[in-house]
Amino acid sequence: MCQWRVEVYAMGKVAARKETGKLYFDFRYLGKRCREQTTLYNTAANRKKLERILEKIEAEITLGSFDYGRYFPDSPRAETLSKRALTAVGGYHATPLLRQFAETWFAEKEIEWRESQIVTVQGCLDRHILPALGHKEVGSITRAEILEFRASLAKVNTRSGKKLSASRINHIMTPLRMMLNEAADRYEFSSPYRGIKSLNVPRTDVEPFTLEEVQQIIQRVREDFRQYYTVRFFTGMRTGEIDGLVWENVDFGRRQILVHQALVRGQIVPTKTDGSFRSIDMSQPVFDALKAQSEVTGKTGLVFTTRKGTALSHVNVTKRVWYPLLEELGLRKRRPYQTRHTAATLWLAAGESPEWIARQMGHTTTEMLFRVYSRFVPNLTRQDGSAFERMLNQKRA
Image (cartoon, rainbow, N blue to C red; front, side):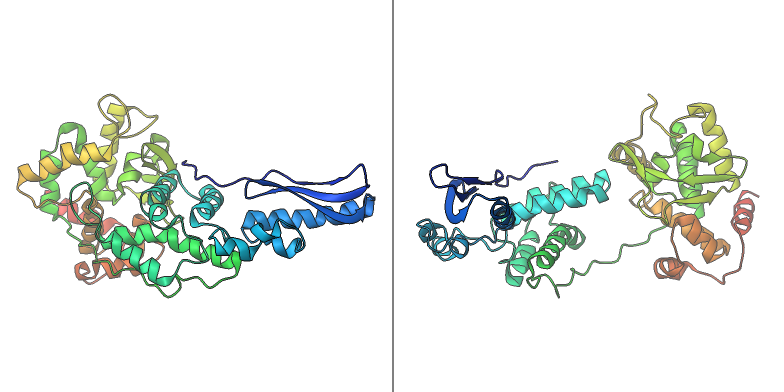
Protein backbone atom coordinates (compact mmCIF):
# COMPACT_ATOMS: atom_id res chain seq x y z
CA MET A 1 0.00 0.00 0.00
CA CYS A 2 1.25 3.47 -0.80
CA GLN A 3 1.67 5.97 2.03
CA TRP A 4 0.51 9.57 1.86
CA ARG A 5 2.38 11.84 4.28
CA VAL A 6 0.26 13.26 7.07
CA GLU A 7 1.66 15.49 9.83
CA VAL A 8 1.69 13.57 13.10
CA TYR A 9 1.50 15.48 16.36
CA ALA A 10 3.27 14.16 19.45
CA MET A 11 1.14 13.88 22.55
CA GLY A 12 1.15 17.05 24.63
CA LYS A 13 1.13 17.26 28.39
CA VAL A 14 0.01 19.35 31.33
CA ALA A 15 2.95 20.30 33.56
CA ALA A 16 3.63 22.57 36.53
CA ARG A 17 6.25 25.29 36.91
CA LYS A 18 8.48 24.71 39.92
CA GLU A 19 8.82 28.38 40.75
CA THR A 20 5.05 29.12 40.85
CA GLY A 21 3.36 25.75 41.19
CA LYS A 22 0.97 26.74 38.43
CA LEU A 23 -0.02 24.48 35.54
CA TYR A 24 0.70 25.07 31.85
CA PHE A 25 -0.05 23.40 28.53
CA ASP A 26 2.83 21.93 26.56
CA PHE A 27 1.94 20.75 23.03
CA ARG A 28 2.97 20.99 19.38
CA TYR A 29 1.08 22.82 16.66
CA LEU A 30 2.15 23.30 13.03
CA GLY A 31 5.62 21.99 13.85
CA LYS A 32 6.10 24.43 16.74
CA ARG A 33 6.34 23.67 20.46
CA CYS A 34 3.67 25.70 22.27
CA ARG A 35 3.60 26.33 26.02
CA GLU A 36 0.70 28.30 27.46
CA GLN A 37 0.54 29.31 31.11
CA THR A 38 -2.66 29.05 33.20
CA THR A 39 -3.59 30.57 36.56
CA LEU A 40 -4.51 27.20 38.05
CA TYR A 41 -2.39 25.60 40.77
CA ASN A 42 -1.10 22.06 40.55
CA THR A 43 -3.90 20.06 42.13
CA ALA A 44 -5.34 16.74 41.00
CA ALA A 45 -8.67 18.36 40.11
CA ASN A 46 -7.07 21.20 38.16
CA ARG A 47 -4.68 18.84 36.34
CA LYS A 48 -7.60 16.59 35.32
CA LYS A 49 -9.57 19.61 34.08
CA LEU A 50 -6.69 20.85 31.93
CA GLU A 51 -5.94 17.36 30.58
CA ARG A 52 -9.52 17.18 29.28
CA ILE A 53 -9.03 20.55 27.55
CA LEU A 54 -5.71 19.34 26.08
CA GLU A 55 -7.39 16.23 24.70
CA LYS A 56 -9.91 18.46 22.95
CA ILE A 57 -7.14 20.69 21.59
CA GLU A 58 -5.23 17.73 20.16
CA ALA A 59 -8.38 16.26 18.65
CA GLU A 60 -9.08 19.55 16.87
CA ILE A 61 -5.46 19.75 15.69
CA THR A 62 -5.80 16.28 14.20
CA LEU A 63 -9.08 17.20 12.51
CA GLY A 64 -7.66 20.47 11.23
CA SER A 65 -10.20 22.62 13.05
CA PHE A 66 -8.06 24.00 15.91
CA ASP A 67 -8.15 27.79 16.42
CA TYR A 68 -5.27 28.99 18.61
CA GLY A 69 -6.85 32.37 19.24
CA ARG A 70 -10.06 30.86 20.59
CA TYR A 71 -8.25 28.90 23.33
CA PHE A 72 -5.50 31.40 24.08
CA PRO A 73 -6.75 34.87 23.02
CA ASP A 74 -4.19 36.73 25.17
CA SER A 75 -1.21 34.70 24.03
CA PRO A 76 1.46 36.41 21.90
CA ARG A 77 1.30 33.36 19.64
CA ALA A 78 -2.35 34.05 18.87
CA GLU A 79 -1.23 36.88 16.60
CA THR A 80 0.47 34.40 14.24
CA LEU A 81 -1.31 31.10 14.94
CA SER A 82 -4.96 32.10 15.31
CA LYS A 83 -7.51 31.06 12.69
CA ARG A 84 -7.74 34.62 11.38
CA ALA A 85 -3.97 35.02 11.11
CA LEU A 86 -3.45 31.69 9.38
CA THR A 87 -6.33 32.30 7.00
CA ALA A 88 -4.70 35.54 5.92
CA VAL A 89 -1.54 33.67 4.85
CA GLY A 90 -3.33 30.55 3.58
CA GLY A 91 -2.20 28.33 6.45
CA TYR A 92 -5.49 27.50 8.14
CA HIS A 93 -7.60 24.51 7.14
CA ALA A 94 -11.04 24.02 8.67
CA THR A 95 -10.97 20.51 7.21
CA PRO A 96 -7.97 18.37 6.23
CA LEU A 97 -6.46 18.39 2.78
CA LEU A 98 -7.90 15.70 0.52
CA ARG A 99 -4.48 14.02 0.46
CA GLN A 100 -4.53 13.76 4.25
CA PHE A 101 -8.13 12.60 4.46
CA ALA A 102 -7.47 10.02 1.72
CA GLU A 103 -5.00 8.17 3.91
CA THR A 104 -7.44 7.97 6.82
CA TRP A 105 -10.31 6.91 4.56
CA PHE A 106 -8.20 4.33 2.70
CA ALA A 107 -6.93 2.75 5.93
CA GLU A 108 -10.48 2.43 7.24
CA LYS A 109 -11.91 0.98 4.01
CA GLU A 110 -9.19 -1.43 2.88
CA ILE A 111 -10.14 -4.04 5.48
CA GLU A 112 -13.52 -4.30 3.69
CA TRP A 113 -12.02 -4.83 0.23
CA ARG A 114 -10.48 -7.67 -1.72
CA GLU A 115 -6.83 -7.29 -2.72
CA SER A 116 -7.80 -6.51 -6.30
CA GLN A 117 -10.06 -3.65 -5.18
CA ILE A 118 -7.33 -2.27 -2.91
CA VAL A 119 -4.94 -2.15 -5.87
CA THR A 120 -7.60 -0.58 -8.12
CA VAL A 121 -8.57 2.17 -5.64
CA GLN A 122 -4.94 2.89 -4.82
CA GLY A 123 -4.24 3.30 -8.52
CA CYS A 124 -7.16 5.73 -8.94
CA LEU A 125 -5.88 7.81 -6.05
CA ASP A 126 -2.21 7.83 -7.04
CA ARG A 127 -2.59 8.35 -10.77
CA HIS A 128 -5.62 10.61 -11.02
CA ILE A 129 -7.41 11.95 -7.93
CA LEU A 130 -4.59 13.09 -5.62
CA PRO A 131 -2.38 14.71 -8.29
CA ALA A 132 -5.37 16.81 -9.34
CA LEU A 133 -7.16 17.52 -6.04
CA GLY A 134 -4.94 16.25 -3.21
CA HIS A 135 -3.69 19.74 -2.34
CA LYS A 136 -7.21 21.09 -1.79
CA GLU A 137 -8.98 21.25 1.54
CA VAL A 138 -11.60 18.49 1.45
CA GLY A 139 -14.34 20.84 2.61
CA SER A 140 -13.53 23.45 -0.01
CA ILE A 141 -13.78 21.27 -3.12
CA THR A 142 -16.64 22.51 -5.28
CA ARG A 143 -19.04 20.87 -7.68
CA ALA A 144 -17.42 22.83 -10.52
CA GLU A 145 -13.99 21.43 -9.61
CA ILE A 146 -15.35 17.89 -9.57
CA LEU A 147 -16.89 18.29 -13.01
CA GLU A 148 -13.72 19.95 -14.30
CA PHE A 149 -11.66 17.03 -13.01
CA ARG A 150 -14.01 14.52 -14.64
CA ALA A 151 -13.82 16.41 -17.93
CA SER A 152 -10.01 16.27 -17.74
CA LEU A 153 -10.15 12.47 -17.47
CA ALA A 154 -11.89 12.32 -20.83
CA LYS A 155 -8.71 13.77 -22.37
CA VAL A 156 -6.38 11.17 -20.83
CA ASN A 157 -4.83 8.67 -23.23
CA THR A 158 -4.36 5.03 -22.26
CA ARG A 159 -1.21 3.04 -23.06
CA SER A 160 -2.81 1.94 -26.31
CA GLY A 161 -3.41 5.57 -27.28
CA LYS A 162 -7.17 5.40 -26.74
CA LYS A 163 -9.20 7.76 -24.56
CA LEU A 164 -10.54 6.57 -21.21
CA SER A 165 -13.98 5.01 -21.58
CA ALA A 166 -17.03 6.35 -19.75
CA SER A 167 -17.01 3.19 -17.64
CA ARG A 168 -13.37 3.71 -16.63
CA ILE A 169 -13.98 7.37 -15.78
CA ASN A 170 -16.91 6.35 -13.57
CA HIS A 171 -14.66 3.88 -11.77
CA ILE A 172 -12.03 6.57 -11.14
CA MET A 173 -14.66 8.98 -9.84
CA THR A 174 -16.11 6.44 -7.37
CA PRO A 175 -13.38 6.80 -4.68
CA LEU A 176 -13.65 10.60 -4.94
CA ARG A 177 -17.42 10.43 -4.45
CA MET A 178 -17.03 8.09 -1.47
CA MET A 179 -14.38 10.28 0.18
CA LEU A 180 -16.28 13.53 -0.25
CA ASN A 181 -19.53 12.04 1.04
CA GLU A 182 -17.73 10.56 4.06
CA ALA A 183 -15.89 13.80 4.78
CA ALA A 184 -19.16 15.73 4.51
CA ASP A 185 -20.70 13.52 7.20
CA ARG A 186 -17.69 13.84 9.51
CA TYR A 187 -17.09 17.57 9.17
CA GLU A 188 -20.72 18.54 8.70
CA PHE A 189 -20.70 20.22 5.32
CA SER A 190 -22.79 19.56 2.25
CA SER A 191 -21.08 17.15 -0.14
CA PRO A 192 -20.43 18.83 -3.50
CA TYR A 193 -20.77 15.43 -5.17
CA ARG A 194 -24.46 15.02 -4.36
CA GLY A 195 -26.55 15.30 -7.49
CA ILE A 196 -23.69 14.47 -9.87
CA LYS A 197 -24.73 11.46 -11.92
CA SER A 198 -22.38 8.91 -13.43
CA LEU A 199 -21.62 9.11 -17.13
CA ASN A 200 -23.87 7.03 -19.34
CA VAL A 201 -22.13 3.80 -20.29
CA PRO A 202 -23.06 2.11 -23.56
CA ARG A 203 -24.57 -1.29 -22.93
CA THR A 204 -22.05 -4.07 -23.47
CA ASP A 205 -22.88 -6.02 -26.58
CA VAL A 206 -23.91 -9.61 -26.04
CA GLU A 207 -22.27 -11.52 -28.86
CA PRO A 208 -22.74 -15.20 -28.07
CA PHE A 209 -21.47 -17.98 -30.27
CA THR A 210 -23.84 -20.41 -31.94
CA LEU A 211 -23.73 -24.04 -30.89
CA GLU A 212 -22.07 -24.88 -34.21
CA GLU A 213 -19.35 -22.29 -33.54
CA VAL A 214 -18.87 -23.61 -30.02
CA GLN A 215 -18.38 -27.10 -31.36
CA GLN A 216 -15.89 -25.76 -33.92
CA ILE A 217 -13.90 -24.01 -31.21
CA ILE A 218 -13.79 -27.06 -28.94
CA GLN A 219 -12.74 -29.35 -31.80
CA ARG A 220 -9.98 -27.06 -33.10
CA VAL A 221 -8.56 -25.61 -29.89
CA ARG A 222 -5.22 -26.85 -28.56
CA GLU A 223 -5.57 -30.24 -26.93
CA ASP A 224 -4.44 -28.95 -23.52
CA PHE A 225 -7.26 -26.36 -23.54
CA ARG A 226 -10.09 -28.51 -24.94
CA GLN A 227 -11.52 -29.45 -21.54
CA TYR A 228 -11.05 -25.88 -20.30
CA TYR A 229 -13.21 -24.36 -23.03
CA THR A 230 -15.77 -27.13 -22.83
CA VAL A 231 -16.32 -26.26 -19.17
CA ARG A 232 -16.34 -22.51 -19.90
CA PHE A 233 -18.89 -22.72 -22.69
CA PHE A 234 -21.28 -25.10 -20.93
CA THR A 235 -21.20 -23.71 -17.35
CA GLY A 236 -21.11 -19.94 -17.84
CA MET A 237 -18.30 -19.64 -15.29
CA ARG A 238 -16.43 -16.35 -15.19
CA THR A 239 -12.73 -16.33 -16.06
CA GLY A 240 -11.58 -15.92 -12.46
CA GLU A 241 -13.99 -18.63 -11.29
CA ILE A 242 -12.81 -21.32 -13.70
CA ASP A 243 -9.14 -20.33 -13.37
CA GLY A 244 -9.49 -20.59 -9.56
CA LEU A 245 -11.47 -23.85 -9.56
CA VAL A 246 -9.92 -26.55 -7.36
CA TRP A 247 -10.63 -30.26 -7.38
CA GLU A 248 -12.11 -30.26 -3.88
CA ASN A 249 -14.94 -28.12 -5.31
CA VAL A 250 -15.73 -30.60 -8.08
CA ASP A 251 -18.35 -33.09 -6.84
CA PHE A 252 -18.68 -35.90 -9.37
CA GLY A 253 -21.12 -37.75 -7.10
CA ARG A 254 -23.63 -34.91 -7.12
CA ARG A 255 -22.52 -33.81 -10.59
CA GLN A 256 -21.94 -30.29 -9.32
CA ILE A 257 -19.23 -27.63 -9.44
CA LEU A 258 -19.01 -25.53 -6.27
CA VAL A 259 -18.06 -21.94 -7.05
CA HIS A 260 -16.58 -20.64 -3.81
CA GLN A 261 -13.53 -18.69 -4.97
CA ALA A 262 -11.82 -17.00 -7.91
CA LEU A 263 -8.31 -16.37 -9.18
CA VAL A 264 -7.77 -12.58 -9.25
CA ARG A 265 -4.38 -11.02 -10.00
CA GLY A 266 -2.70 -14.34 -9.24
CA GLN A 267 -4.39 -14.76 -5.86
CA ILE A 268 -7.22 -17.06 -4.78
CA VAL A 269 -9.95 -14.90 -3.21
CA PRO A 270 -13.58 -15.51 -2.15
CA THR A 271 -16.28 -14.90 -4.74
CA LYS A 272 -17.24 -11.26 -5.19
CA THR A 273 -20.87 -11.50 -4.05
CA ASP A 274 -23.14 -13.89 -2.17
CA GLY A 275 -24.89 -14.69 -5.45
CA SER A 276 -21.59 -15.71 -7.04
CA PHE A 277 -21.12 -18.29 -4.25
CA ARG A 278 -23.09 -21.11 -5.83
CA SER A 279 -23.24 -24.65 -7.20
CA ILE A 280 -23.43 -25.37 -10.93
CA ASP A 281 -25.06 -28.50 -12.30
CA MET A 282 -22.84 -30.43 -14.71
CA SER A 283 -24.20 -31.35 -18.12
CA GLN A 284 -22.76 -34.51 -19.61
CA PRO A 285 -20.10 -32.69 -21.72
CA VAL A 286 -18.90 -30.86 -18.59
CA PHE A 287 -18.85 -34.08 -16.55
CA ASP A 288 -16.84 -35.86 -19.24
CA ALA A 289 -14.44 -32.93 -19.66
CA LEU A 290 -13.69 -32.75 -15.94
CA LYS A 291 -13.21 -36.53 -15.75
CA ALA A 292 -10.70 -36.28 -18.59
CA GLN A 293 -8.99 -33.31 -16.94
CA SER A 294 -8.62 -35.23 -13.67
CA GLU A 295 -6.27 -37.58 -15.51
CA VAL A 296 -4.07 -34.59 -16.38
CA THR A 297 -3.90 -32.42 -13.27
CA GLY A 298 -4.75 -34.99 -10.64
CA LYS A 299 -7.38 -34.67 -7.97
CA THR A 300 -5.91 -31.94 -5.74
CA GLY A 301 -5.05 -28.31 -6.38
CA LEU A 302 -6.17 -26.28 -9.37
CA VAL A 303 -8.24 -28.04 -12.03
CA PHE A 304 -6.79 -26.06 -14.94
CA THR A 305 -3.11 -25.12 -15.00
CA THR A 306 -0.27 -24.38 -17.38
CA ARG A 307 1.89 -27.23 -18.65
CA LYS A 308 4.23 -26.46 -15.78
CA GLY A 309 1.41 -26.85 -13.26
CA THR A 310 1.14 -23.17 -12.38
CA ALA A 311 -2.02 -21.05 -12.31
CA LEU A 312 -3.29 -19.74 -15.63
CA SER A 313 -2.77 -16.12 -16.61
CA HIS A 314 -5.97 -14.97 -18.30
CA VAL A 315 -4.03 -12.35 -20.28
CA ASN A 316 -1.65 -14.95 -21.70
CA VAL A 317 -4.45 -17.42 -22.44
CA THR A 318 -6.45 -14.74 -24.24
CA LYS A 319 -3.53 -13.52 -26.36
CA ARG A 320 -1.89 -16.87 -27.11
CA VAL A 321 -4.82 -19.27 -27.31
CA TRP A 322 -8.20 -17.54 -27.59
CA TYR A 323 -7.67 -14.76 -30.14
CA PRO A 324 -5.41 -16.81 -32.45
CA LEU A 325 -8.02 -19.59 -32.48
CA LEU A 326 -10.85 -17.23 -33.44
CA GLU A 327 -8.71 -15.80 -36.22
CA GLU A 328 -7.85 -19.30 -37.47
CA LEU A 329 -11.53 -20.24 -37.58
CA GLY A 330 -12.52 -17.00 -39.27
CA LEU A 331 -14.77 -16.02 -36.35
CA ARG A 332 -15.31 -12.41 -35.29
CA LYS A 333 -12.94 -11.33 -32.52
CA ARG A 334 -14.76 -11.41 -29.19
CA ARG A 335 -13.69 -11.23 -25.57
CA PRO A 336 -13.49 -14.54 -23.66
CA TYR A 337 -16.38 -13.31 -21.47
CA GLN A 338 -18.67 -14.14 -24.41
CA THR A 339 -18.37 -17.79 -23.38
CA ARG A 340 -20.51 -16.86 -20.37
CA HIS A 341 -23.07 -15.11 -22.57
CA THR A 342 -23.04 -18.14 -24.84
CA ALA A 343 -23.93 -20.49 -22.00
CA ALA A 344 -26.87 -18.30 -21.01
CA THR A 345 -28.22 -18.02 -24.54
CA LEU A 346 -27.83 -21.75 -25.22
CA TRP A 347 -29.77 -22.56 -22.05
CA LEU A 348 -32.48 -20.09 -23.03
CA ALA A 349 -32.62 -21.47 -26.58
CA ALA A 350 -33.05 -24.95 -25.10
CA GLY A 351 -36.03 -23.71 -23.07
CA GLU A 352 -34.50 -24.02 -19.61
CA SER A 353 -36.18 -22.39 -16.63
CA PRO A 354 -35.04 -18.77 -16.13
CA GLU A 355 -34.80 -19.40 -12.39
CA TRP A 356 -32.50 -22.38 -12.95
CA ILE A 357 -30.35 -20.41 -15.40
CA ALA A 358 -30.07 -17.48 -12.97
CA ARG A 359 -28.83 -19.87 -10.25
CA GLN A 360 -26.29 -21.38 -12.64
CA MET A 361 -25.02 -17.91 -13.56
CA GLY A 362 -24.87 -16.65 -9.98
CA HIS A 363 -27.62 -14.06 -10.38
CA THR A 364 -29.88 -13.53 -7.37
CA THR A 365 -32.94 -12.86 -9.57
CA THR A 366 -34.01 -13.37 -13.17
CA GLU A 367 -34.15 -9.59 -13.77
CA MET A 368 -30.67 -9.36 -15.30
CA LEU A 369 -31.32 -12.50 -17.33
CA PHE A 370 -34.30 -10.97 -19.13
CA ARG A 371 -32.70 -7.53 -19.41
CA VAL A 372 -29.47 -8.76 -21.00
CA TYR A 373 -30.69 -11.76 -22.97
CA SER A 374 -34.32 -10.84 -23.73
CA ARG A 375 -33.98 -11.16 -27.48
CA PHE A 376 -32.70 -14.72 -27.09
CA VAL A 377 -35.68 -15.92 -24.98
CA PRO A 378 -38.06 -18.30 -26.78
CA ASN A 379 -41.25 -19.76 -25.29
CA LEU A 380 -40.02 -20.70 -21.84
CA THR A 381 -40.74 -24.00 -20.17
CA ARG A 382 -40.07 -25.14 -16.65
CA GLN A 383 -37.13 -27.51 -16.86
CA ASP A 384 -34.08 -28.30 -14.78
CA GLY A 385 -31.27 -28.79 -17.25
CA SER A 386 -32.60 -31.72 -19.21
CA ALA A 387 -33.75 -29.57 -22.14
CA PHE A 388 -30.18 -28.44 -22.68
CA GLU A 389 -29.00 -32.04 -22.59
CA ARG A 390 -31.57 -32.97 -25.23
CA MET A 391 -30.45 -30.14 -27.49
CA LEU A 392 -26.82 -31.25 -27.27
CA ASN A 393 -27.76 -34.85 -27.96
CA GLN A 394 -29.83 -33.83 -30.99
CA LYS A 395 -26.85 -31.95 -32.41
CA ARG A 396 -24.62 -35.00 -31.96
CA ALA A 397 -27.13 -37.30 -33.69
